[in-house]
Image (cartoon, rainbow, N blue to C red):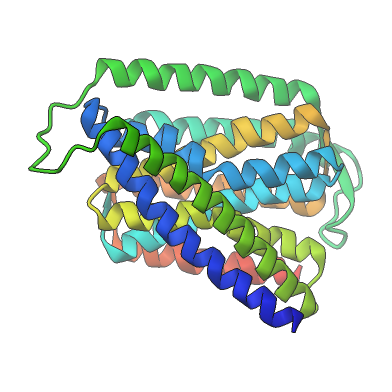
Length: 328
């Protein structure tokens, strides 16, 4: 009986995610048209913040409870999912054009803050004398409060820069007959959409986690896969809905923006609350994340779009990573 209830919760969560994303994208796109703000800026701010809410809730809660491994694996796992699955699936549906701002500003920021995270941990891990691939659970490094505070400062500066950029580069594109909603409707759609996305994401994670544990998966593996995938479902659903509605720049901005938020805001806040101990597996996952981020940057900059073939490669790469995580 319990397993049937978990399945029902899972299904209800998926429905809430899909409809919430639909409302959220409509409201956000209408705000962008009303204030003539480029869709990519809306994607990097409002949409990215909204879809990153589940990661924020899970990681900060884990940090408060001292569950360090869940906090770090959730952020790294979610960022991998965003890059490989969200962008991959969107580009398989339709080749995803990537704007100059994403290539010249946001992807480099994403790479820089990921590299900073590696520099905070990898040298210490290698010099600890405990780094061994045969013992992935051995703690070898710690991310302290100082890097967390630094990340929060960078986050504030980044948001202020985006706001200034939005004011300077108001779009002059026509609405093509699209109906402009009253502001109260936009706010209602955005807030209602966020509530449905967060609630749906929580329901999916809860149902999927219980089903996975009943099937014999360990809590560590559930945290790295089910929880990371579940908290990234809002990015996936929202980006697909945005792409299908012609808001492709919003879809890309949402994905890259969410990754930046996950590291700067979520991880920054988590380690400021409670320093995070890193084990060998966490360090390896960070290196994998940086390599994947570099590949995503190359794909985006090579032809200013992510093609269907590259999307297939990205989804296959995520499948391979998941198999590796299970085997490990």
